Length: 513
Image 1 (cartoon, helix red, strand yellow):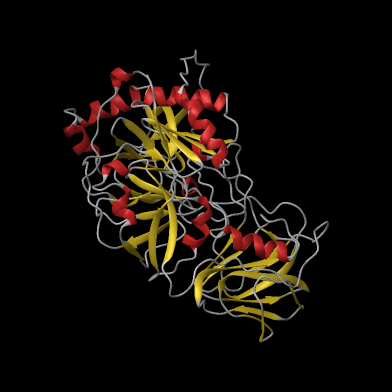
Image 2: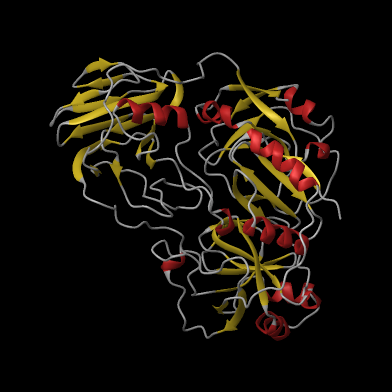
């Protein structure tokens, strides 16, 4: 069959295949034979998302994928994973009724079926499992109204899938039980208990088995290498997080790239103090105050906010000495919202999958910084020279409308007037926005096509449109897969500006060819 290829921004492609088995076949082929510039490939219910490192490689990949025809291969023996389940879920009886089964028959079907982990997504450690024998599949409708809180360890059914929730989160699956088997351990290699391709068996256990708190997807490893106590946090503001370059390439485990929301500003602060561009630093919103425990070379970039060392204002983008006992403060922003504080040597923090970034959606990475915390830095050996003057790359202003360029699709045909409906009106950033997504308000977009869309891979910049019709622009901590249609995708070059938009900002989208 010929696959439909859709652009997802300028550096990703969605291959529409129509069925899960074909999606898994393509995923296996592209994982074993990556295309030039391929960063990752993410399978979903009926599609494969191919993420590339540049627009040039994406253009070449589109030509290659258009003629690709992966053949089925003889699978090697899969890894066997056993998941213990206490079958006492709140939807157990009603789900049995929907399927025309008794409670005991539903449990017997679930435990007697050999499941295959098809793909990851939604959250780290969340594995979509399907019956290895398609004849044993049963269609289970999702809840009409999703729960706002599904406890970690909950075992759910939706469509033809079964999965264990690795952490407490919203969800619309029907819950038939709970599992004490941890789905994620940041200290393990690999950290996900179930990986695509694994064979999964559910085994019924008694009530006396306790679902431990350790099933939450959180935690980091200890900081690697020597470090020095450098800063004491007096006031972290609204939110202060450790961020770095991020942890790309782990979408199959449900892990998004995360990292600094405004990368240009983070890189500018790091380069000013002589760090590598992707070194760990502090991302702050809503002011910050720290006291130096040692002499430290520091720089701040990002939001247009007053920065003072011992009460004296210093410019953005340049390195300054913060002497031991001195204080550095960042005041309220007059334009933008995110400030980046870099310290020469780089912040020393625990790492998950090679990154110290905090992912606010999944809970991976260090905890948010609190008042009284001591921040440690790596010794500044072998670094480049610090520079006293540097540019601040902020691209938003307080009063102007911010233009975000976007590529139409992959699901613009789902909407009346297509992408023109998005670009033809002005939008306002709402207070519900965060690192996961920029939530917008305005005249709702109207659907041309109704119904549910099977989950598909997503990248930062995807503009999803939930049923109420107002868009959400995915930012750095976005979910790996999503079930709402994506009308367009903001190009990577404009994501930094999107992340800097505070509530009340006005936004206009412009189609990028």
